[in-house]
Amino acid sequence: MIASAAYGAEREPVVQALKARSTPLGRSLRVMSEPGPEMSVDEVLRSVGSDRFRSYDETVLGFGLTHRPVWAHLVVENSSDQPLPRRLVIAPSWLDRVDVHLLQDGRMVERWSTGDEHAGVPYLNEALGYVLEPTLPPGRSDVLIRIETPDPMVLEVRLLSPLAAEDLAEFERYSYGFLYGFIFSLATYNLMLFLGLRRWPSLYYAVYLLSFIALNLCYTGRGLAWLWPDSPGLQRYVILTFIVLTPCTGLRFAREFLELDQRTPRLARIVALFYWLTSSLLGLTIVANQHAVAVWLAFCTMGLFIPAMVALGAYSVRQGHGSARYFLYAALASMIGMGLTEFSTWGFLPFTTFTYRGVEIGMMLDATLLALALADYVRRQSLERERAEREARIDVLTQLNNRRGFLELAEAPYRSAERHQRPLAMILLDIDRFKAINDEHGHVVGDAVLSAIGQTLAVSARRSDIVGRWGGEEFVLLLPETSLDEAVELAERLREQLRERVIRHEGAELRITASFGVAALDGQRDLALLIDAADKALYAAKIAGRDRVNRVS
Image (cartoon, rainbow, N blue to C red):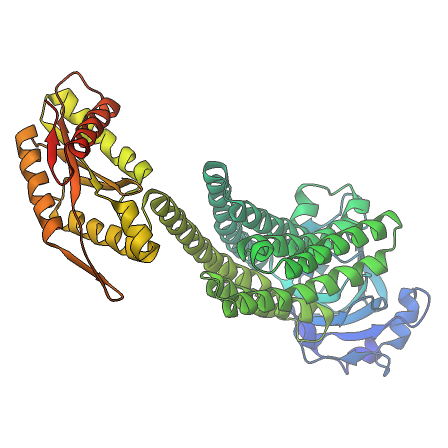
């Protein structure tokens, strides 16, 4: 016979078992912290109704980190005349020990013992937590629950009908399935980007997302239920491991995405030191089996990670990083979500469904915004690469194609003309006595001359023509669908335009002339030979006295 709790039950709220109740029963619980060694059920019952048990105004009770074991008392009324099957749901799954006793009139009716330190984890449901199946006898019953854990101590208790429990489990499965599918698809997409384009931010972002999925699987109990139910030693540290690894992978992504190594190497070294140091310290605490130290280290790491990501984003925005604003918005969303979850599990905020799942809501916003950030980053990188490639093909002074750019562009029309037997001509021109201009007026005036000639050629050329600075004071034009005679006529017009142009620069007035060599495709030349023929014609024009057009005979 166990001492009866009936005298205390009158003063406590009574939960009607016949009424549908989906909300947690935190306000109906009376809770006592175990003052010393583990108490017996008889000792606990003698304390029911005394001031050692206290009530709370939250539906889910949170007691913070490394709290002493807790006893909770619940009074349940079955007003029918038949035994009533119910589901007693206790969460979260990371509780080390959960002992539940169902009593009526001081007699033990049923008892259960579970928790993640038990091999096989009896009664664990991957969607709801620990699901017990009491059969409530008619009348009033006492339910005593003892929980013990060095992790954040949280107690969420529901009393449901079997159908309501199944409906709730179904909802949880669908909602988490959506979460996992959304984040996993983003991770897969970014892995494909990395494999296809070798963009390292995409890889680190994918690892960050996957580490969050792993963390969620751990702290919701799904990993314990599906993957390692017979490994309580692994469960002891796996949640803490991913609480540290998720911030570390997030900071590694931030370092790469925000280009800290290139922009602020010192800050990059500080970020790297943080994630390597915290992960190393966690490894040492696991090897030394210092679980309490590992708990504090893990949650302090997560607590520092939240503002650190916001600070890095804000700093990069101020430094002018193009995509940092998306990163900052994502970090703010993640900070709010993770902050709600972490501070509620610590006991600093009320533990509700919203605060508990705040990290998931924040992470979905974070993932969405960071996907936009990566898309913007990829776009900017592509534009930068295109600009660099374009600049590598453009002559800075004249803004015409340089030799490399000209040859790349000339290859296609040359092949087309050769294949379809279409006319193609080339003009090569050289400024007469350009060295003397530089010697007499200086290189600044010489550059002005080159720039003016480049403008003249660009304006005179057709859309299909390819114009370039061949090198030094030489320029080249490739003329598709142009015969040799037509090319000679164009060269003569260009020669006259240059003769008539007066170039003024800082008080100097110059008139210039140029010599031209013209060649056309005759079915026996390749592009290099065509250029060589125009060059020989140009040389002949120079020998003949300059300021003239010479054609291949």
